[in-house]
Amino acid sequence: MTAPLAIDVRGLTKRYGGRAVVDDLALQVGQGRICGFLGPNGSGKTTTIRMLCGLLRPDAGEGQCLGLDFRKDAAAIKRQVGYMTQKFGLYEDLSIRENLDFVARLFELPQRAAAVDRALERLSLQARQQQLAGALSGGWKQRLALAACLIHEPRLLLLDEPTAGVDPKARRDFWDQIHALAEHGITVLVSTHYMDEAARCHDLVYIAYGTVLARGSEREIVDGAGLAVWSVEGERAGAWAERLRGRPGVQSVVAFGNALHVAGPDAALLAQTLAPLQAETGLRVAPSRATLEDVFIGLIDRAQDNFASGAPKGARS
Image (cartoon, rainbow, N blue to C red):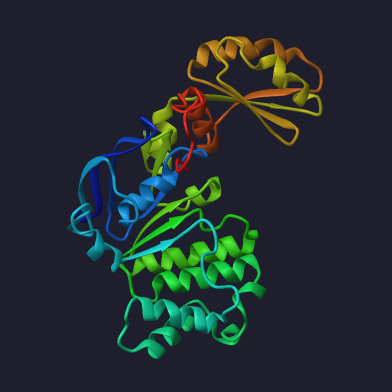
């Protein structure tokens, strides 16, 4: 049985200076699902998230967020959404507990102290509750920000690059928490640049310059791309990167240590171009399997930047 949709919007559009930052975007996210929102800087991810939570008014679009009209019922939606911004937005000269108490006041929670206690326990912040936010590491600031997002028991989390700048263990712990929340029915829309994080999402939506280029599960996106990939390995592999770019059948060349991932949409033409390398001493050339990163690099290489002519670039992340 298909889960009901927590987000179901169509035709979402936002323009700045006559250019569409978000262009006729459709987005559907099932209840209790984790949807990864991916795309390069300037692709419209933050603008979309701000429109969904009522912080930014769209120029066009219709649909529902948590069963409410996302344009007419923006105030009601805000009370059921937790929004975590790219940058730490709490008070650095207040303690962890004081910050959470402040957020609880904003939401006018009737039993504030109990709500703060629950938030501290949920994110394992009890032992540090008197520590000033400004003295926390990136990972602990992230925990505090998530605790603040959850204090009013939202049904939907909108997370804008929440793990930027934190260490790998903190990122892993964060994603464990996100999956635990989803198991309890909370829906999550999360933007990220990390492919390992994208692989942990139930569904993915990839946008570039305000337009959806791909959507589906990781496997659906990779298989649907129809991308042929070869691996070129060896100590001298890097020297071939520039020589291969632009050759027939080659869409992208990406270095990974002593190996190159060479990708293109025409398997036969790509194999023909790479055939001479198989005779090179010290190189191992063989077909490989496309990854999400291969697919997304190919997508962005083909996308057209709608601000390339020098139009204003504000608010298009």
